[in-house]
Length: 303
Image 1 (spheres, helix red, strand yellow):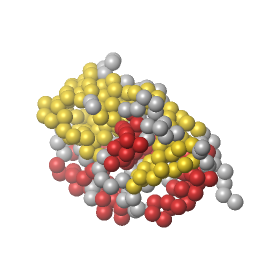
Image 2: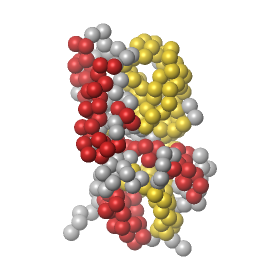
Image 3: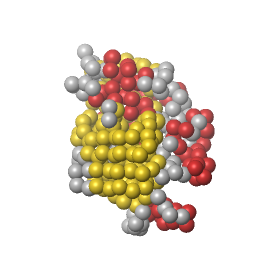
Image 4: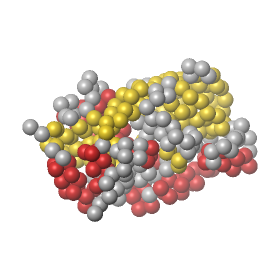
């Protein structure tokens, strides 16, 4: 009897490119000896539901879609006592998780890396009662991914996020925050806050420095304090995008557990999707909680 795979995909992610690649992807899986059960997502939270219902006796659960689809899939797996290995074929707009883990954007190459790769441990975050795979964030611009219409994202891709962020410049509002970690305490007015386990966030590399480890049980915490005037914004942007450039408004912390308190309920984004409004949030790192299939060496070139 062959190994069992549950393949869950979002047909609308990105430019719906999986519709033309599906048969070739299945061919890769079946030739590798997998018995494949397919589920096409129909609505929000569908990926999590099907994983919880049908994934418990699978050898491998593969998802294809954007970071939100991946979040749902892993959220379903986290409740299992025996967690199947995970495969991911990116099909979203920015695909931050795939970029951080060096998973090919080419869908067929990603499928090949799943069946030819190695199971590598990955940290997962808890956000109160929810999970996130690579970033939990609040503040200016962090709501852009889930507020940008799907049609615009599909046509423009990453520039759609930049355009939407530019539109929101006039409505920037800081949040008064207290933050506690195992070692640090902070209180102040924050423009942007992020707790992440990633080398790329919202399409930008290096926000947390170079070579962030994704399986060390520690998050990178980034707080951007509220500028006193708009002239300080370029300094902040330069500090975020250029390693080595320091700004007194940009603070970095390392933590495995973070607690936030806000004066007013504040909107959060988890892996690019709306995470609700909260006055208090506890975030914890689940070290090496799941195993994802990826290549630890280069795939052979096509002849």
